[in-house]
Image (cartoon, rainbow, N blue to C red; front, side, top):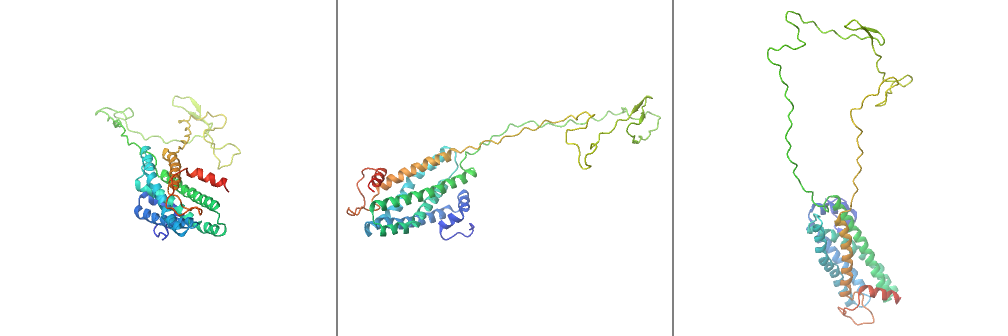
Length: 334
C-alpha cells in the first residue's frame, strides 16, 4: 500500500507499508497527524483489552481497567521518552522529539493492537475456565508477547534511521588548507634570429623527408656509415599453434624476448572497514529495559486490573510487594 493512499486503519498501514512509515518519520512529514492517529488507535485498543481484564471481577472493575490500561502505557511513555531523547543527544544522534515520539508510538500501537487481537481468546478462557491465577498469568503472557513484537518494530525503525545517518554524529566539516595552484611551465619561444639545428643552411634547398620503407625481417640494411645491420624480427602477437583470436597475456612474452617493464605498481587491495553499531542503538536496548521496569512497577502501582474475586472492588490497592514477586507467587499457587 503506497503512502499516497493511506489506510483508514493506522495499524494496517504500519503492517503493510512499514518502509513508508519509516520514510515518513525520517522526512518528518506530517508527523503530528500520524502520531495523533496512533495515539487514538492505541487508547481505544487498550481500553477494549482492559475491559476484558476487569470483566473477571465485575462490570465496574471492567470500566476502571478500561481507563487505567491506556493510562499505564501513556504515563510510562511520558516518563521514559525524555531519557531516550537525551540519550540520543548525548551520543550525537540527530533525532528530533517528534521523531522519537513517533517511533515509540509505532511500538505502542503494534503492542496494543496485537493485545486486542488476543482479547477473544482471553474472553474465551474467562467464560470456560474462570480461574483467577490462570487468567492473570494468561493475560500477562499475552501482554508480554505483544510488547516483544512492538519492541521489535521499534528496533527496526531505529535501524532504518541509522541507515539514513540520523543516529550517527554529524560529520565535522573541516576546511582543507588552500594549496598554491601549480602552473604549467610556459613554452619558451626561440630567440629571434636563431637558426634551428634542423633548419636547412642558407643557399641549400630543403629536401622532402624520406618515406619509411618496409624491410623484411633478417634482411641486411645499409647504415649511413657504410656498415650493414640485420633488421630485428618483430615481436609476434601470437605463438605458433595459438588461436588467431588469442593474444599474449599482459606481461608475458615468448621465449627470446625481454619482458616488458611495467610502469605501474600493483594496486593494493582495500579492506572494507568493519561496521560498528552506533552507541545510540546500544542505548536503545538499555532504554527498552528501563521502559519495561518502569511499566511493570507502574502497573503494580495502578492495580488492580483483574480484580481478585475474593476481595471487594477498589480503584487502587495499597502499595506492598512488587510485580515480580506477585507473579512468582501466582505461579507457585497454581
